Length: 404
Image 1 (cartoon, rainbow, N blue to C red):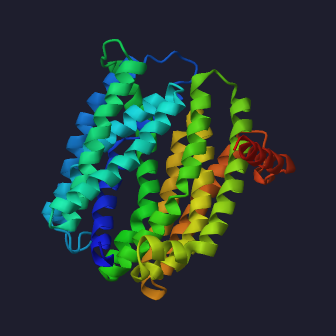
Image 2 (cartoon, one colour):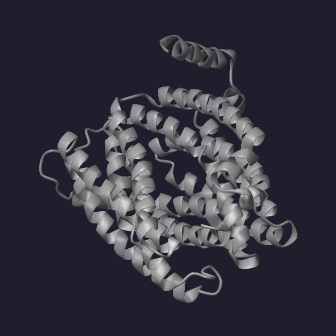
């Protein structure tokens, strides 16, 4: 796809992702807090998840339809209802993968969790490649390929949970479901705000600029957020550790600080590599037409580091049920990003939108960090990597080399 089609694709995909985030109603994060001090029956968790996914799918469909007719000339420039429908198709299957892979993660089966995450990328690539051969409209082919790959993996996730984790009869626990919705309501706006704050730049650029510029920014955002794999992987291990065995809050807080330092070391090294070789990477993967994506990419690297720390620290606050704090932080960050993006888009361009995104995330992580330090015995300087952290990584690298 050229920059224009990629810009349209980004608008569709992020619109669906925003409604998926809102439609999750915070239940994905609430699952972590439900492991605190109790033997959680995964058969109940699986039954509750399926019932909620059905309700959420209806909500997403209605939300997309209403937003399209209300904002067709603002958000959905150059987007047809047919394309939006193709985008919606992947929503219910994405929810199944998200909820059931979360169950796999909380059960402590990290290998299975990573297997699903890896297969998701492989199926996506294979399906899109196949549909591009047989479908004349490349944009529709990509969207439909995304939906079919999600469908295949959704079925596989249900199978894995049934076979390995929740083999007994699945059923709905009304009391737990009600409590989940109650706790989730405190987080849903925050999760929605966090996703919107990250993606809102695409919609602002789509309104004020050309589809090509949306495509450039989408590539910059996509490449920069690939580094989220680091924070996501590290956070996955941390949350599995939290959920698998009973820990004291002080132990979890200490591990959160150590995990944050490890993430900082890894992410800064990766970001330096992206700065040095970013233009080459863009040229090889997307072509020279996308080279204008380099400058916003470099700016968004700061967003990735801040967002990664935010996610790791938020795991601790989620565990101790500070749901409202997370919502307030994300909402303040999103509003800041929105206001600054509108102004900077008209004065600086796509680089200005990237700066606004970084600044909004800085406000959000500052609030999250303040509450974390207030509720623990740690301070902000504890996030600075120590000599032992570098020794640890050095030894890991040496061990890998020796094994080879």
